Amino acid sequence: MADHQEASVTLPSDPVSVSTARRYVGDILTEWGLPADTDVADTVRLIVSELATNAVQHTLGLSPTFTVDVQLDRDERLRIGVTDSHPRYPKRLPAAVQQDNGRGMVIIRWLTAECGGRLTVCPTPEGGKTVWITLPWTVPVQS
Image (cartoon, rainbow, N blue to C red):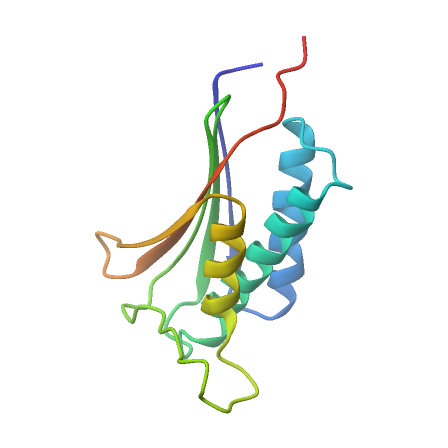
């Protein structure tokens, strides 16, 4: 198996694409050796769901698609990025704010940190942004 692997999918900014993104990343990680029934796999699927939901709900119709990139540097790290074409960066609401939604970034940050990872947001050359999570890759290399 290669030391570096990448996969990518571009989906329409539609609520049905959230489950497609989650399934896509889960399938890729299983193919790369992460068993689907592990806590880490569940956590990654939840993070992807939240990132994709943000890309669909908070771009105000200004991003017709979003892209999910998955990168694996074996024995080191897993990176997952969700890119949309809307320039507004995600906002983290204070815990005291009483709202039914808007907690996605809090959930993503907490889950990422809980796994020993980090979250970054980077502008794209086209004026949008990519929200990246980077997690340690702890799956043993299979011979």
